[in-house]
Image (cartoon, rainbow, N blue to C red):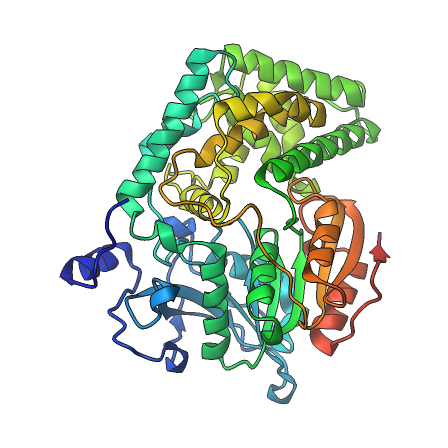
Length: 510
């Protein structure tokens, strides 16, 4: 690792290029800073691109953006600073009924909250009646000192590599590609890599709470956002206000246990998709029975491993990109119809739809530019998790992964080599979320969630501690519960966040 740079003209020049809003700090009390809220610009490429957010209906619905200064190194809180990008829309109800700010993290890690919250804005209209809705790009993400690794062209090539090697040559190519990616991260973002752990982001959250003027943190975490919320609760239990965790990461699992759980989760989602396809009133175009659907998908992936088909020019649909497209479609039941169309198209030799789904999974736009979702995701995960799996470790575990999922097992098993040769040592085997004395946290598990399987909610609730984690079960499909549109789940969330009514532990919504 390079030696850390001191605040200097060179550092400030780098900050200007990366749009991080860095500064020298100089002993400033960052809790006293005032945010300069302005109209939000169009998202940067690192945030995913697109237009500026549109106003929301219902009065006081203009989106505004600001940059909050935070320490680069929380162990040197009076030193160099970075800028964290925030977005906000004011509460729509009477001022006297306003509770405070409700801060969202939508997961990843690596997703831009500044762009995600406006995209979901109308979904949270009821919560906006009493809260300012706020989200942010965590450090290393989007406009918040983004981690930079490979350029777009090289990332295209990297993602075309075979992610499930069948022989020594393919295995060597995969490991060499991983080393190349990780070396590029160190070369281009070595200064940031030691400072993107979830504990750093949790400290940023507490600074954000203070700068926004709230005595406690009111929080809505989704997917990885539940892990961030749990770490915050552990570090600042007395500052937890009303908090909801949806699509819950299991904090008690190691990387291997979590990957195995995901293999089972995506296999379950595929089983449900196949059953749904053949149960429809119209004939399922990708199979005559649920087992036939799965068999034909497996055969397609085997064929693509040998001979890719045309995708989005100039790229071809490979076994790896097709698997990524299927994974993306299983995140939401609303995408199942596109999965059916994509499979039908791929059987006919056209990989356009599956590749478009895979691009969405990777943060690639139609113009070929990538957000920094993948670099940030790798940087946070590898800085958090001390596991460093070798190819031999993966091969020893392959039987268990294949048993968990014939289709996705190897794909997820080989993903564990991603942190091999990472420049920064990982912090722990799993995050500490034990939060004795914290206010109740509503923990929602979805029985059909592929990415954060249902059992994770039970693990989180128990790890938070007795009287803190309050579990709610949603018997549904897709990643997350609140945005499924289920009125039972939404009523429970509204009752808690708006009125402080804690549901009975173990409640169930269908």
